[in-house]
Length: 274
Image (cartoon, rainbow, N blue to C red; front, side):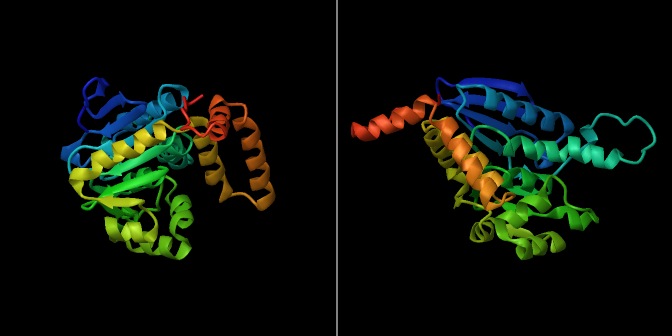
């Protein structure tokens, strides 16, 4: 993504670019020659940036995107720390828990709304990174591929958790069993993508959406995100109890009081994210 005048820009490392602008944290994968296949170092940096976004009151929305023609072609294990010797029972499961699952969980658990701006191919863990985001924008050229079956692998990074909740079990199985590329338009029809735009409009649209979110009641949005994410795993009683608790918490915020006051006073609310 390009920088705007007056924004604070931090080049964290060549392979992950980071900028904060108008309350939005922009996280950009930057390995265009490798279709942004994510390395261990990149993964750890993205996880850290998402944690920072949760803790920083000045950050009120996040965008995850990439440079070049690919969003993320999957995992590149060549950048992983060297192993400690012969593999023992439990090593693979531990690697998945601490790696791909932690990567996707960092998006799901981020306390700020996260937008994926998918500029190209999102395959494997790259697809799951995008689908874990709260809102998904895709360029017309974007494709989503459950590539694992092509390699004789079981999906990781929460794919078998995310996809059935987004498109239902039958569609999820079709995508995972065949590993066919799904166009951006077809992904939108299935409900995996919120909006498809021409490639030249992707950044502009992502910026508009993110800045709109950044001007909203940040804590209310965070609590809403938690409720929606948890609702698919909870029965009605648990979901209703969580909703009541969220309402109790939210009504202690300044933004909730501002929202009510602005309604009574018939004016536009001025949310501060507090």
